[in-house]
Length: 485
Picture 1: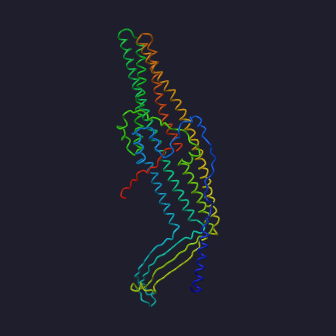
Picture 2: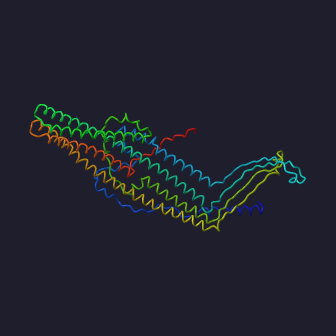
Picture 3: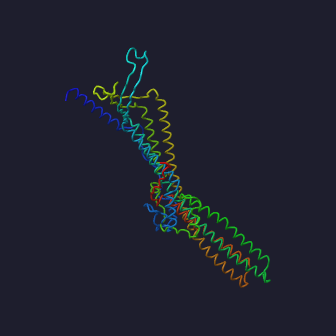
């Protein structure tokens, strides 16, 4: 190897080594997950017995613990076709596409172009030369930003964090949609049970009215007792339209949640069924485990990561931007000689763009990026606190609702027995009609309250699963192509 060639090689190696050394550093701060102090246990844990297993956290579908095939089918349909999930999936696809585009910024940009010109100059322009001329050229151009100070790398890092945040948003939307489907289904079955209770009690009160009316006709009753019996029956019947409207509303909501028109499930859900049975295993997990699983916390963390990386993007503007460009091509005034070796062209250039005189604007952009990061940090910390609050509230409500359920079940049983005994006493002439009507009204109220409480027990269990992010398997909704694509 000749001395000039050896010197050029050594210089090139030194330049490459310097480039690698500089590229190992990137402007701006490196992201680190913020330390967020969390309690060792939830305060509501004391309301739960130690022999209850924790809520599902292994990816098992929690709603299958309700053992209701129709509910399973509704959730599967929602995960496949819910429009909110499709919107979230489209946002994720967009974020992933932007990430792929950002990664290309790390690579050289190579373009090819060619031109063929056939022109005629004016007499003055030609200045005695032939007026007609031809010009042909073609070549490949290269442009590559040497990312010595990490501007491009920080940009890719920010976009990757945004994509991860959007992916967590999709998971959070799945949690929200499934929770709404299960909760609405429980409300529907609870409303149907309340409607059944109201209609059954109306039937019994109709028998009471008929009995009183018969006694009045036989001369042993009073118009006062008849009026009271009719009034109580009408009051019970007045409950029915409102409950029917609520049943229809819940049915319509389930249809829309599963991607259907509001009337699509009216026939399939019209048959009254019992409320879903509560899962046998449900208990609080540790706060740290809950925070690790919750997708909204992951989304907030990744958005904080993205804003931190953008500080580096802005900070890199304080340093010069180096761009390597090159050209390899041919030029000729005659198409027949375009391929001759003497018509080849080449160009290698190193460009430097440094806005050192515009440092005020650069520092202003850095300050803005820093403010964004502080805001994202506050949003992350707030998400953590809200997650802990949601879980505490869900655990308390579920535990207290189960206690309420137990008391109301006893009250409903006792009130039904009291109503039966009051009717027997009335038939035997040992009690007045007022005692019968009061017992029947108490029975209706107790049974209606029990149906409400059992509905709340199921929906509060769903709230616990939602708050603790337990039992939420991942599933991607169907991608529906745009018309014409």
